Image (cartoon, rainbow, N blue to C red; front, side, top):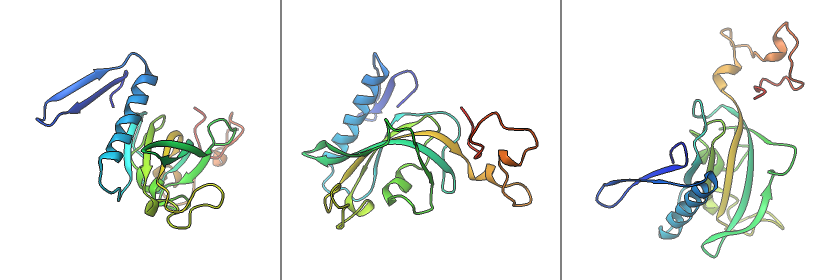
Length: 189
């Protein structure tokens, strides 16, 4: 995935190709289908498949960084996107998570590494990296492969969280009042 609705790829002869799409939506939809095709062509999915949809800006996130994300989760059914089982896209609250803290499924911890603020990515997660044989009662059947579209809306890098003395620093500690009502260290943009 490239900026301005471009995608580039190599064919079997290592020849480089570029495709320009007429809209961001067309580029994103194509990238989703590429990821689904990759999944369907692999004999057994044993790790997380990631496909960037939009690249985003800034530094790639790593373990220890705190994120706020919007997401939609589908069951992978009939070789494609099945039923939506979870989403926070049309809700007021974004999901907050700290990468590497083990509070989300292993597939997210792995699949979101390197994402940038404003970036969107499709993740196809095998059962072993998701909810496994247990599933989630009433929502995710046992041994389900899951598909998530995740968008990183806010990032707080772990490096920004501690001062030189190792103490936590946030906008609350500054003498000037913050113009942002939530002074949790996340930037307002």
